Image (cartoon, rainbow, N blue to C red; front, top):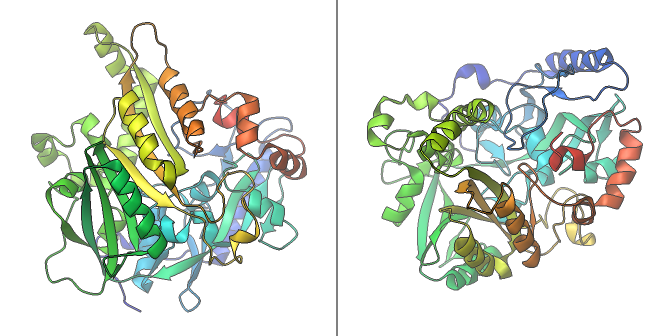
Length: 480
C-alpha cells in the first residue's frame, strides 16, 4: 500500500484523537443538551456552515460540538476509520492519506463535515462507482432528539434510523461517531478531458463510461465534467497512476483548474491536489470576489483562496448587503440567488441541460454522475428499490448531478424565487429531484411526496417524540 505524501498538510490535523478524547467530547455534548430548557429547540452551536439556506436568527443555546471535530482511530488493515461527526473532510483526508487510504467519496470542499455529508448528502467524481458518502458508513452513533445516543447499523435495533438518517439534515439527530470504509489510493491521478459539441453525444458517452467503468480500453476511476454551453461540454476522466512522467499540475497558485479543462486534453495531479482541485476557486465562483483577476490573484495569499473564506464573504454580504446597495445605487436590478444541485436520470441529462441553458443565464455548470452502490457493505441495494428512506434514488439507475451556483437578475414584473421555482418544476418534469442544502419552494404536499413523508413521520415519532429538533420541512423550506 503506497504511503502518500501530505507535506502540505499541517501535522496538527494529521493525527487521530483517540477514544478517551472522544468520550470526553460526547460527555460535554450530552451536558450541553441537558442545559437547554425543555421545550426549546435544540440546535448545533457551530460558527460555520456549507448550507446556503437563510434561516431565522435564534438566541437559543446550542449543542457543544467543539470536541467532535477529528478522527478517532484508523484501522489500516481493515481499511476503516472511526470519525467524529464534525470532522471536516480536510482533516479526514489529511489523516488517512499517510496510510495510503481515503474515503470512498470525498465532497469537493474542504470544510464539509463527514456528519454533514451523511445527513445532508454529498457527491464527487467517484460517485458513479461508490455512490454517496452514507453508503460507505458501517455504523454510527447518533444523538437523537430525545437526548439519547444510539448506535445505528444496517441490521440492528435502529436500522430504521440508519436508513432514514441520510437527507434528514439534523432533524432526527446528529452523528457523533461514524465508522466508515476507506479505499486504497495511488500517488497520482491522470486526467483526460473529452470535449463534446453535442449534448446528446455527451449523454451517450457518459452512459457508456458509467456502465463499463472504462473508456477506450482504460479503466476510469473518477468521472465528472463541466458544461459551458450547448456546443461546449467536457467530461473529465480520472485514473489512478502509480507514477508520473511529467511534473504534476498545481492549481493552488496562478493557474485555475476549470480553465485548464478547455485548454488541454490530458493532465496529472497528485492525489491530494486532485481531491481538492475545486476548492481553491470554489469551482469557478471565486471570480465573484475578484480572485481570478491576475493582478488580484498575485497578492491574494493562497492560504485564503479556499471555499470557507469565500463562504464567509458571502455570509457578510447576506448580513450587510453592501454590494446589493451599491448595485441599487448604480441602477442595476436586484438579483436572485440560484444555488442548487439537482439529479436527473442520465437518459434525461441532455434534455434538462438544454432547458437550463435556454432559461437560466448562468454558466458554467458542473456535472457528476452517480448511482447507488451495488457492492456496498450492506449487501446489494437492489433488494430495495429505494433503500434510503428520505431520498428518492432508485437502485440500478444512473443519475446526473447538475450543480449551478450564482445569481441572476430579477427582471421587471418578476420576484425573488421565480427562477428557482421554475427550476424545481423542470426537474420534476425530467423525473429528477434536488438536494436540500439551499433554498427550496415546495408545498408541504409536494415536499413529503418527494422526500419520504410516511417514513419520516415514523422516524420523527420514534427518535424525536417531543419535537426538540426542527422538522425537515421547516428546516429546509421554511428556513427556520
